[in-house]
Image (cartoon, rainbow, N blue to C red; front, top):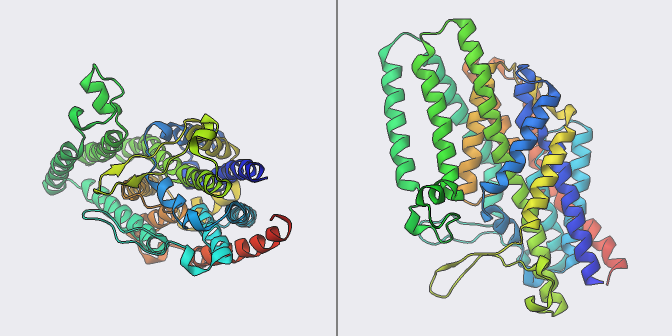
Length: 434
């Protein structure tokens, strides 16, 4: 019976991942469709490709955080099943009404709500201090980033928009600022890159260069560098371009910014489903009494942990899990989410190629930053905040605050409603599943 429930959870988790893809497709393609850089069909193909490409870029940090939402030793598989079902229901409901709510927080809320119904408030990992140099973790930190993520996105987007606006003027100061920023970012990336000697499992042992540039940690930092240097190069030549030329350049840059955001979307959101599957396998092992050796190889999952001496023990996840998760979200993105595309692309503020580049670039950088901190954030909140930030450069009145307030209410309600729904589903399932 337990194995059957585990397999059902894995199947429903991938269904949720698929729904997440078409629910959140708008996050990556709304601006590029609104500005007519790509047709809707071309845009979803573009976004889906980079969603899947994220498999080779990101690790399992966010997956680990999600898996440890609740203490896996104190819950059962019915808890996880109820949480996933609740998340699917809330995602479909918000998609139907065209509300860009957070798939991430739906999953966290559902998982936590069912766990509380099963074992009380103490079963949830609310807050845990991080070790020296590390971020704290827990549900309260995730809730905190419901507020922080859109504000970070808005701030970065506003900064990029102002930077671009000043760079369009024939003045030497914007060029000096841009050159200085390129130098600072270049040095930061140089110091952050892992050397060949520090890479635990180099993919190309006999080729240090290939090993360094294919290390996931390094790929993320090189992507950050590519994004910043692409915008910087445009800023250096912006003042020499006429309006037609600058618009053409911005439209091409949207391909880069939307691809970067789609990578972040795939890496952030797919990991959450990986975390749920990993937690389900751990709970199954604990409750069934079987050892890891007795499980089929395709279910050998170990969550990252800390040794007694503080040394980090890397987790293990069979390749089929991330491949299935990245594949499901990519296929979901291909299915589109046109109701939410309309909301994101036109109802918050009027979007041109200028706002599209600013918003998507800011959204991508925010997602890479939070993934680096192993914090699951909402791609929906992030890009919405970024669109608002770019719109603010035209004045407060350029943002349609009536629509924005409705979106904020959806964000605020997502975790508690998902938690309550999951608790009800847990009680119902517990009648039939002992």
